[in-house]
Amino acid sequence: MNVTIKNDISLEEKIDFFNNHRDKFHVVADFDGTLTQYFDHNGKFRPSIISLLYNEWILDDDYSKQAQALFDHYVKIEHDTTLSLEVRQQAMEDRRTEHKELLMKKWLNYHHLEQITKMDRILMRSGTDVLLKKLYEQDIPLIIFSASGVGVDSIGLLLKHRWLDFPNISIVSNKLYRDEYGVMIGYSKPVIHSLNKTESVIRDNDEYKTLQTQIKDRSHAIVIWDGLHDAEMVDKKPWRTILSIWLCNDKLEERIDKYSDAFDVVITHDEGFKEVIDKIWL
Ligand SMILES: [Mg+2]
Image 1 (cartoon, rainbow, N blue to C red):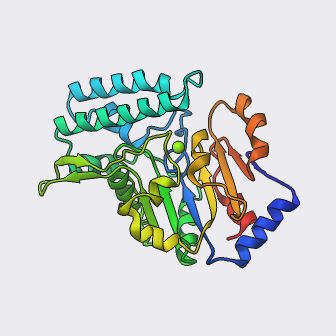
Image 2 (cartoon, protein in one colour):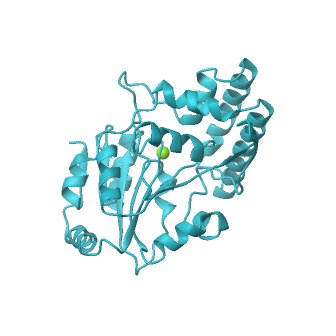
């Protein structure tokens, strides 16, 4: 059984609420490992968008080596829970900033991101297309909230490539600024990384004024994510109804018992969204 849906009154009440108040909520979803598969068909970790840039040698050899070294250095800090959250957050900001400076030095161009899209190495999770279409048809805003270093452009390209770039979707992620030739010349700040994905990123940023207006009267939310810190993507308040869908992709044994009670739906083993869509509301 790869989908566990809480069987209790509180969840039934939430489902009723969302069914009866379609204009009162929005959906927030992480991208990598959430709307996409965590493993590929051979059981190997699926690549993240940015890892394709260096693992597939899209830029030069030196870039691939330096980007891999950055990953190797910072990934240990990211997951070292003996360190304080502040220390880890600063390290993640440094990681993203150093990587972006490196991309600029290596003349990253928009066409490199198009190249990644066309490789078809990113597998969408089964049912993501149905989920996105249903949200669009019902005019429910969807925020794709991603810490990907090249998120806005590459997620936009990937959705377009699959005919899923619906107008109800807002991508909240790292944006690259480019010149008229497509060459990266800067990036949006503050950088979004795996440990600062909280609602304040949207609330306190003029860049998201349109989105702020769209969700102003839709404060209730359905939240879908895999990385543990992403549970913070929506602030929990007593007056908000929040339905949580957690994709437990790795460290299943140590995590599933500890966290599954805290969330309404838990999906494992890269299962698709069909059962959830049927059960919950759409
Ligand atoms: Mg993720």
